[in-house]
Every structure is written in C-alpha cells, then in structure tokens.
Image 1 (cartoon, rainbow, N blue to C red):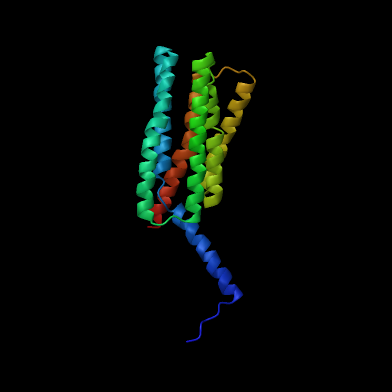
Image 2: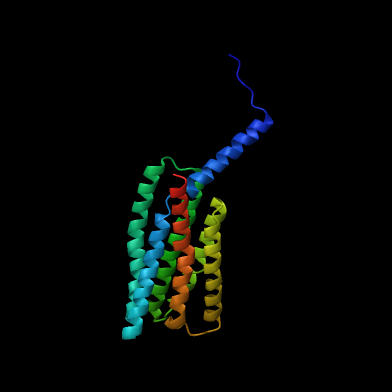
Length: 209
C-alpha cells in the first residue's frame, strides 16, 4: 500500500488542530489550585486585618506565614492529583508549572531576606512582601493568561499589577501603608487575580465536559 502524502494545507490544519487541543486541554482543566491560593490568601488577610484592628499588636503579622505553610503543602498534592487525572504533561503544562515554580522560589527568597533583615539588624522590610505579591504574582498571572489565551487571567493579573505599582510608589515615597486601605486593596486584588479566573476556568470545564 502506498503511503498517503500530506499536502501543505493539510499539514497546517494538523498543526493548528494540535495547538488548539493543547490550549483547550489546559483551559478546560482544573482551576482548583488557583482557587485554593486565592481563598487561602484572602482568609489569612482578613484574619490579620481583623486581629490588627482588635489588638493593634503587630505580632499578628506572623500569621502571614500560614499562607506559605498551608499553600506550600496543599499545592503539590493538588497538582499531583491533577496530573494523574490529565495524564501526560504537554509542553504548555511544563511552561506553566515552571513559571509558577519561579514565583514560589522568589517568594521564599523574599521571605528569608525580610526575616534576615529583621533578625540581624532589626530592619522591618515586610512591606516588600506586599509589593512582591502584587508585582511578581500578577506578572505570572498575565503570562499564564497569554500562554493559555485566558482573558480572565490577563485582566485579573493586570488589576493586581496596577495595585502593585501603586503600592511600590507609596513605599518609594515613604507613604505609610495603613491596614485600613492596604488590606482591602490586597484582598480585592487577589479576588481579581485568583478567585475570578479560577471559577472561570472551572466553569469552562463543566460547560465543555
């Protein structure tokens, strides 16, 4: 039997179809990891905000470490279960995984830098963590949306980035970061960056299942 030759038009159609399936496979995937980080960050933020208002004790800021502890344990477990359900990873999956790994390692580095400054020289640099969360995370979110062609990630990341730029200007201008307005801004940003896109992805998964 003679092998069937594929012409140029058919080749382009096959490549286009493969790219579309790769994007669809991820876009219609599970948004639960994003939702876990979103709801976890918002819950801890609200808890810190309330306790600061009631006690006026800055020691409650140590509760922020719960975000990294809980999220750092839950995220790999959820990712492993997700990969088992989806099967083999695509190139797109690997790009997204490495992108968020960079964010995670950067967060750990920033945390240790702030902790080191506090313990060694008594310098309070924890405001850098707020700026980090609303600069690095939104950049990753926007890149995530571009790779996956997911508009909710791009819009949510853009809103978070604008908030981060505003906070950066405040820190540079030595404007006092009061919990009265910083915490609501932080919470709203994470709703836009994590909660809305996470539910949007899950909605697409249910709609196309």
